[in-house]
Amino acid sequence: MMNFKGKRVIVTGSAGFIGSHLCDALLQSEAEVLGIDNLICGSENNLSNAKKHQSFSFINADVSLSPASYLPHNYRPDYVFHFASPASPPIYQKYPIETYLVNSQGTHQLLQYLVAKNPSARFVFASTSEVYGNPTVHPQPESYWGNVNPNGIRSCYDESKRMGETICGVHARSFAIDTRIVRIFNTYGPRIGKDDGRIIPNFISQALAGEPLTVYGSGKQTRSLCYIDDLVRGILLHAVSEKTKNETINLGNPLELTVLEIASLIIKQTRSSSSISYLTLPLDDPERRKPDISKAQSLLSWIPEVSVETGLQKTIQYFTNLG
Ligand code: NAD
Ligand code: UDP
Image (cartoon, rainbow, N blue to C red):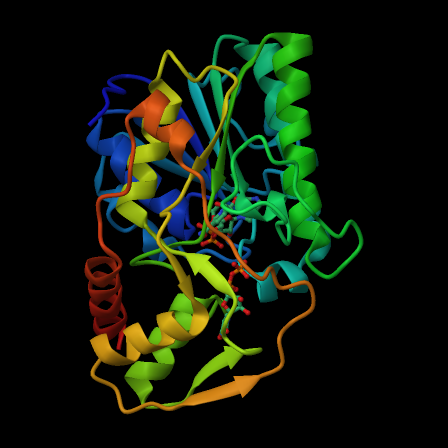
């Protein structure tokens, strides 16, 4: 693991799925971690491990606001991981304003705070494969600019992530802040919100309850599923590397599966007798998605190591334990 000994690290969205795992990994690497979350869609239960560490503290705040309003006076972070944002389509569609604010205004506020307090800090922004929209290039390399509907039901998320990337670029060029962007492709694992509506929690909960798995549309649309441990390792490598200053990097698992294949895998691995029920495909649901990870491979020597079977098994175990 990377050495963050004595580094002051902010993780926004720390009570969420990815943020909480990031906190755990940073604490293991001896960082002083300050988690910030307003619990709009996360849970403090996700921080039960982090809270055992003396080097962890938590602030309940909305990071779309000025950091001066919630950070201790003159707090100077060495790293900021900006991971706060609803990420599940039904949740960001329920909170469209909060979603576009945290990714745009929140990113601006945090970066302006660094300009004022510590311009040599590193800023890591959680972007998404959604910046590619319904892609016309397959698989998606970082150089592809995407095919996004600017005014559809997913736009509050997709376009604000694109704006967040713009804000990172402006702060790199105009203020010489070291901003690093990670474009995350569908990631799953323990602590993903049980009821947050995404494919993996929905299918596992349904399979364990013996209920039909709700496949939207034909189920022929594809996604690539990355296990959380692989993702966190990639994020931290990107954050510390001397080769990726101001770079944008895709992180995800290139194994492409249809939604129906994912449903079958989960039915098999839970040994469930669930059937499949076909529901309407939501608007603007991307037809296919698969990361081109050659940039992460060459700059960070990163490739995913956890197979989908192993990752799903660990996630199924987590949901079983939740009861
Ligand atoms: P999550 O919903 O589990 O966690 C998000 C956390 O952010 C929650 O705890 C929520 O309460 C917090 N939050 C939201 N708005 C906030 C605000 N204004 N102030 C403070 N806290 C706020 O989602 P996740 O899957 O852990 O995603 C984390 C980040 O990674 C998000 O930025 C998301 O867009 C990005 N991402 C995730 C995936 C994925 O597959 N999981 C894919 C692409 C991008
Ligand atoms: N999906 C599905 N049934 C569900 C939840 C999702 O068929 O109960 C599909 C959804 O239509 C999409 C894919 O699974 O094609 C991934 O959806 P998710 O909401 O997890 O994330 P997205 O990649 O769309 O942001």
